[in-house]
Image 1 (tube, rainbow, N blue to C red):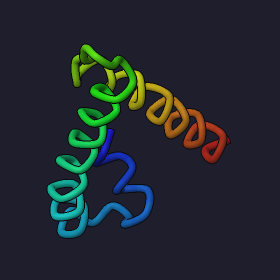
Image 2 (tube, one colour):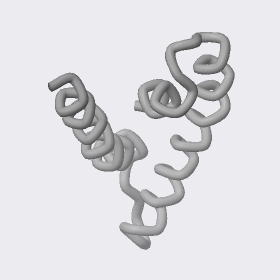
Image 3 (tube, one colour):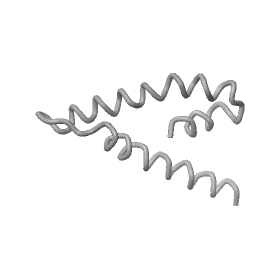
Image 4 (spheres, one colour):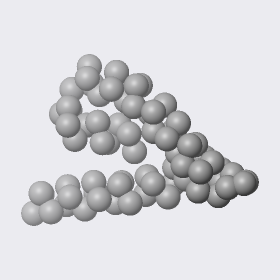
Length: 71
């Protein structure tokens, strides 16, 4: 999900996508871990579950926005 989001504000140039994605991917994973620890206190949610719950709507939004732009 992160490289697609980065591509939306940097453009298609891989010289910019790769460094931004390398910085923002761990930030997104850390955020998902923190949310998983806070939401289900005193236990935890797995970080993969939280990442999927957060990432799926964002990815669907990006795909739908591109289809409308191509029409």
